[in-house]
Length: 114
Length: 111
View 1 (tube, helix red, strand yellow):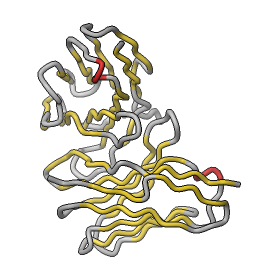
View 2 (tube, rainbow over the protein chains, first blue to last red):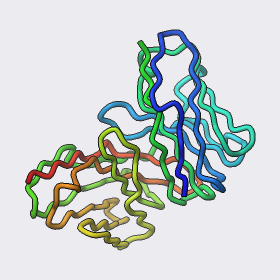
View 3 (cartoon, rainbow over the protein chains, first blue to last red):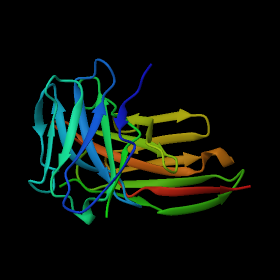
């Protein structure tokens, strides 16, 4: 079956610009997660959705980062006034019901801020 | 705060040899996960370890969990080239949905 998909696969932007990254989870998965992976590091948690609501956004680094999941399926991660330090791979994952269920990861969006 | 450490960070080994990757975590964890990541690719789930003494095996990989020692191991038996990848362990506490990842072990199998 279809896995988690993310678009775009690569995004190059200039410092100060606004970007949106999209995640389409596995059909039927109610839990959705965003992580950020810097080069040579493990993924770091950003935000977790259960259904339409953000159940835990404690990993968002600052108020330039925001994410939505209006219909409980597709999610968009939004970054305002991008900075060079935002360059990373942004990974989305979904799981059937959250909790300890295995999280399945998408291919990621590689963001480069010039 | 839950912290996860892996060692070694880099591992180069010959085909046919055995080796073990270690994953330590700082506080009580309810679940321990192992993922594989190929260069430029996303993470592939390998194992979920649910309780103390849990052991899971798939092919040449075997993962175990010792919750008292807060240690998980990933053992590679008779390594083959296609096992070359970065391996991550991640811990999760029930009620706190986020995975906390280690820094990864970059494994290179030399023919």
